Image (cartoon, rainbow, N blue to C red):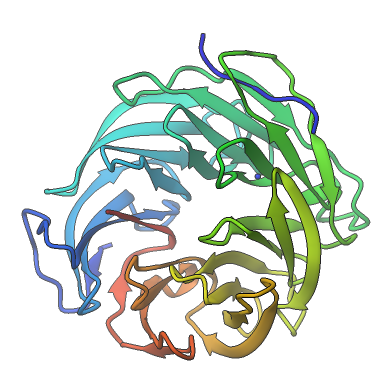
Length: 371
């Protein structure tokens, strides 16, 4: 069994005025787009689109039935897609699909149980796939076969508690798992213990229950999602309970805190997602529950620190969002408005404007592009 060693040291479904299409244009403006949903309403699972990153228009392509695919990610070459089935019981699973970028068709390869309830995040380095299991309070690691399918769970790490919120932090919750830009580490957000866990990657070795070094964050913050800058020098954490963003410098596996700044000034305790523009000049963070929208920050290129420059209201419950590779559009998955909103970005100011080219889909919660 091949894996990693970790040791001490992250519907109706249509586009607005949609067109049906059989193939994805190979031109650089055309992207295949994957949308994961919650399926307790009218959604059937994962939907695929063609998205033109010059015009901001989407065209529906295909769909496949999957139970609660609330987070998904394509492989780097776009041949495979990995999607969770976020369930609070033994049916919680990770699904592997082959993907045809031309037609948008997904074909199930196999499915493996996550051994932890409510998987809500997926990451891959091409050799393994990680899931963060929120209610299970754990991180699962799946070795990959050459055909893109999944081996059974090989390593399972459990988070802990310790945060002061006796309701939200009473049981372990792992919310996000990410590979570092240099590929040497994994970082996982330990929501209920107010810390980030760091694991060192040692290829070709296995231990069943890895230990980790912890980076503490502010008490009662509820660390949720972590992202790295395009140049790999900085990392940014959005915390769900505090509504704050914590900025870190990053070097050789070390996260050093440099700033904390509010993304949610209403303190609604529902901050969700965080991403940087492709050029690294602006950072965006989504907030839910009150004043739903996106906080916008300019990034200082000299030290990575943030300055707030604006706030864009969105539809209800913007759980996830993504920026096109050319930086022209930001798409927000507004779960309870049942739309993906398409905003045009100003590359100079970082501000957003609504194109009113919404993509209608039941309970969208995750968007990914396949290049």
